[in-house]
Image (cartoon, rainbow, N blue to C red; front, side, top):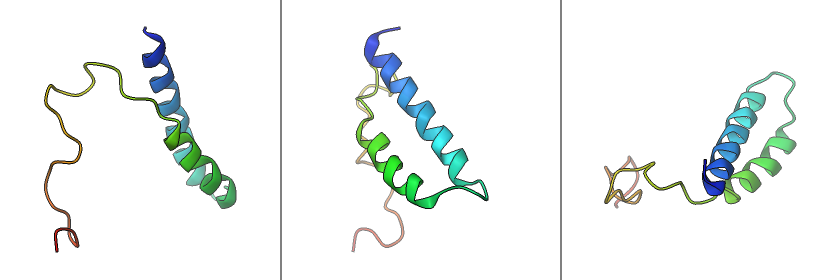
Length: 68
């Protein structure tokens, strides 16, 4: 696995584990609020081939409340 692929996969796993932790009854919301954005900001660019050619994450359907 390429180094960037490994970093991407590890960060995605950590975000998933944080989401599971946040759903626990005794979760510390301050911890989740401080660590979540940091993990998301450290997410490297997705490895090549993860998305189809020409994929643009900014395109897609308008969601309620958008496009006014």
